[in-house]
Image 1 (cartoon, rainbow, N blue to C red):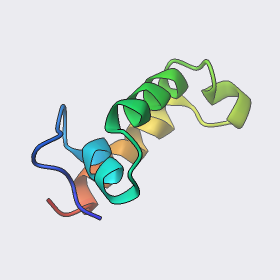
Image 2 (tube, rainbow, N blue to C red):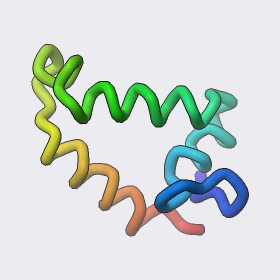
Image 3 (cartoon, rainbow, N blue to C red):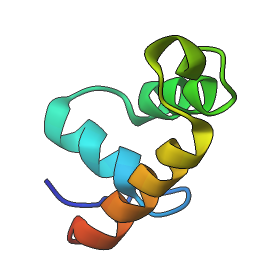
Amino acid sequence: MKRSDNDKIVGGVFGGIGESTSIPAWLLRVVFIILLFGIGGITIGIGSGALILIYCLMWMFIPE
């Protein structure tokens, strides 16, 4: 897996995940935003701060 150079909005993380799993990157971004604003995050027990931290860690450690 690698970050995407073509399908990139912030860091290319979701674009890269989408390319390697054939899931559309827009769908991954929508799910992330829904979880980030707590609609689903509260029910699965992940806070928005943890989601942002996970995204930043993926941005740092997934190669470009």
